[in-house]
Amino acid sequence: MKFVDEARIVVRAGHGGSGSSSFRREKFEPKGGPDGGDGGKGGDVILVGNEGLNTLIDFRHKKNFEAQRGVSGRGRQMYGKQGDDLIIKVPVGTEVYDLEMDIKVGDITEHNQTLIAAAGGKGGLGNMHFKSSRNRAPQQFTPGEEGQIRQLRLELKVLADVGLLGFPNAGKSTYVDAVSHAKPKIADYPFTTLYPALGVVSIDSETSFVVADIPGIIEGAAEGAGLGIQFLKHLQRTGLLLHMVELPAYEGMADPVEQFKALEIELEKFSNELQGKERWLVFTKSDLMTKDTVKEKVKEYVKELKWKNPVFIISSIARTGLNDLNQHIADYLSTSDEDIWN
Image 1 (cartoon, one colour):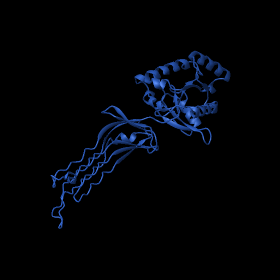
Image 2 (tube, one colour):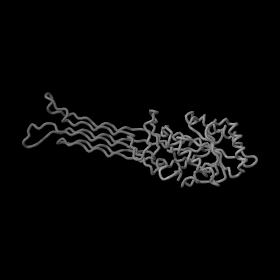
Image 3 (cartoon, helix red, strand yellow):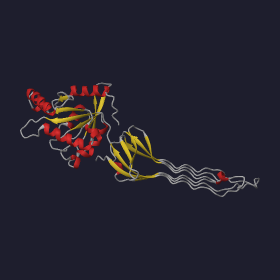
Image 4 (cartoon, helix red, strand yellow):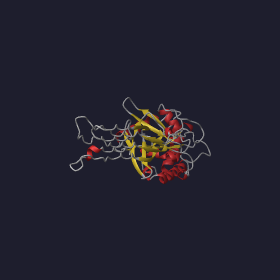
């Protein structure tokens, strides 16, 4: 399924039903008064979070949504029926923006959470409300109010505890495949990952966390190069970032320090908030070098980077270092006071 993380739609709430102008006309009530009922309220357009959805692709072709009108009032003080609400299911993690007002309407972060995207119009008043000592036979009534019309932008940001950051072929997808039941596409060419993938990592029967893999980032991403910059926003909701760097096992491979610095620049251009998140350095593909060489190289890189945060060395293929990394992640998440959904 093609991943779509942004959509624009138009929602129209139902028009309120008109009030009624009516008078009692009964055999034994020669002076029967006004009895026009009120119109029914128009239906709302309501967005509902659904954890079974992971894309906004349903909104690619259907972009206009309209709730039902309210029914007009009738005589004998009969109120019109309220219009049915229109329920629209969206993935959990969807942010909603009003395009005309340029404001954020809401954020759907839980299953079955609701958000009124457009409010239905109020029903009109029947003439029974206008009776007075001076006007015993009022003919006036009010029409129903128009339902709210909104142009909305839906933006999906995946909800995960841990986000993976790195250049293409840094080993992010291989890590997700090794530690979870997720099966991201893995190959030896850049941009294998074309959309975010989520995996659940279980430490024990009571402890687990969700990890998000996004397309790799390259230099110039902030100016539109590559694929990953359009998905960096997904990392804004995570509580921890793993900055994965491929160890250079062969001559001619990119220098880890230079790759790290280049990605730092892209992060800073994209978001100061993202650049300032808790981040750990993870060196990958350690199985392609001897243990002594790995230790020597990593020590050299860390010193050159002046890195102060935790450092880990893993091989997802050989499955070394994974348990240690995952346990540290679980411990950090369990003690962190950061609200990862903000």
